[in-house]
Length: 118
Length: 115
Image 1 (tube, chains in turn cyan, green):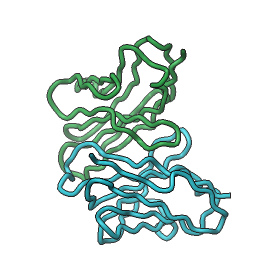
Image 2 (cartoon, chains in turn yellow, purple):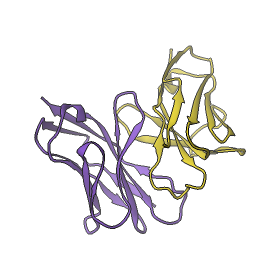
Image 3 (spheres, chains in turn blue, yellow):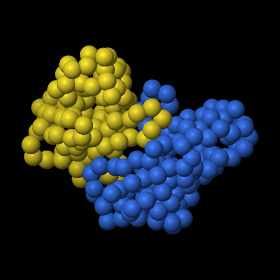
Image 4 (cartoon, one colour):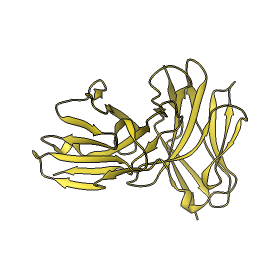
């Protein structure tokens, strides 16, 4: 149980274009999903908390207009990197929390998306 | 506030030898502690957790970790390392009560097991 799937696994896009990354909870419903960014040889940086049916909560320093998050259903959250630039190249990982299991201790992660902007 | 320190960027060990990956933490109250493993270009996989009870926690792939409250540590161990254990390991902490239930991760330790 508690499988989280991300798509795509990797994507290459041209500078100035937008890229959408999907995060799905496959066998449970998630009221909350988390989006992380990971730089090479560094830890995970929490970007935002995505709440189903409401606006995402962004961490300090994260541009909400650049990283658009939509959590339209209990099984899907999307992260759109708008007007991507080479400095947006990174590894993006999502994590989902099951309804009614908010106190559940461990988090479950998607497999990540490698974004390269050329 | 909660924080995690992984003092080693990299740990090298020979296959068959025991391994230890260090982690210390800081929380206001009692902690939940976790270890995750990440293989290249993959997400994090849950290895084990400490919630309460026995200080020695056993997890996946033969890994275990020992919770030491006085030293605020939660070191990851394995009696006999495999080459396939080579990966990036993250320690995480979360306060047991209150807050947003979002864990804080350490910077990660790269484990390299030599044949």
